[in-house]
Length: 537
Image (cartoon, rainbow, N blue to C red; front, side, top):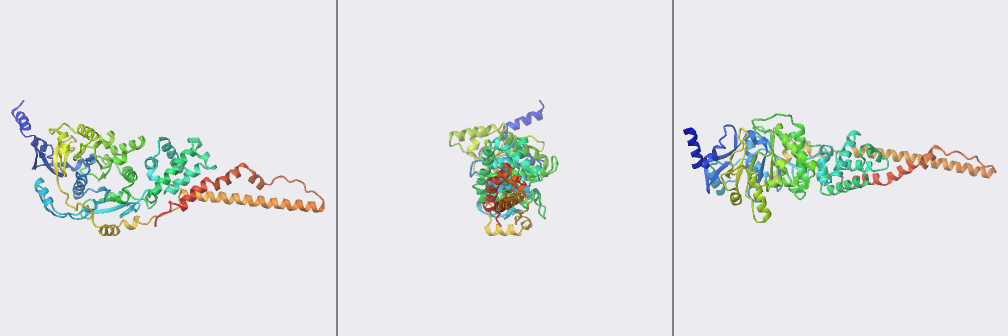
């Protein structure tokens, strides 16, 4: 071993903090996370950073409630914007809107800035505010039912595997017949038609749709509508490329999806966020590794996305996360513990910011041990460290510029420079109405789609049946009059063969059609027309 190698090894033994900090000394552009914590002290000259080029390798921000996860999101989002990278944030509690306004100076911020060698300047960042379907403040974000797809729809309807497969058949039938599924009443109409007497034969060749399964789907749709989902599906459909914009000064636009109005429907908004990500994946071209990502997407309350998910849904999420990296998009999942994220997804997350964990119960202790096992070998006692971190402190490991994991580093994080809290409601509303996107997406549009086409066919069938019935009745009356006249003259009229109209009315097909018109299909479509499916104007 050479003298220089011996010296380096000796330095590693005597200065482990220096060795850790050396792992974060990147040559290219990087985001500043904070200063190294070692042996109970904050070392402002030992900075912990993350390479900008590695943000498309995805990440995880985890920690117990109240440990500072939201502020970490804000800190990373600010620096991404400053580097010209657009950001998408889900604002579930309504406290991220402040990213567009300058922060408020104070003694605590000054102290934090001194601890981590931060030059803190109050700064607001360019932003847009969105809402799901216009529920709550924000530019309405809508999807058509077709674009949402059967896998995600099965997730929010909580269907089992068999029912999910049946829903896939329904979507397939609608596609092949040119029946556009724009809103929920379109889907309801197609399901009702396919179990009606005239529609049953449509799916026989590819498996069919049982009345029981159709009933489950229709009931699930009704429950979904009562959650306000009617507003989320329709047109104009949101173009996810709007999320990739930069401001005139070159900073990335921070898109904030305001979710407080639907925070009691977590499965709904988490699945809708997955649609946004999947739509981006489908639309963006392959670009490989870039100097900086095209977009970084923060998936808050990530555990809600995976709770009760089907195998098909988990496969879809895993595939999207794995492949969207090559489209230049980074995804950060934000949750309480790494075990909330499936192993196949967790394996794709190269950057980790782990805030404090609690160990108050046996389950907490088990989760703590599992979390420690997900980190590389460390110079710290991670079990002890993770339960002793303060608010705004975290254990960090990221991917270096050559793709290797950096040493585990306990870090005191920098303070966000924007407002740490919500902006005033009036300011939020003013920002929404002033956006150029407001006129494009605010007003819903209801054009002809599956519901209208099936309704038109139903009306035509009714008219045809009524005309045949009227003709049969008229011919019956004419024969009765002729017979009466024959009796009056003493002559009996020869017995005539049944007319075409009589044959139609007497046939089983006619009786089946009339019975169908008055029962299932008519009832389901009427319920959609006069019930919860009406659009809010």
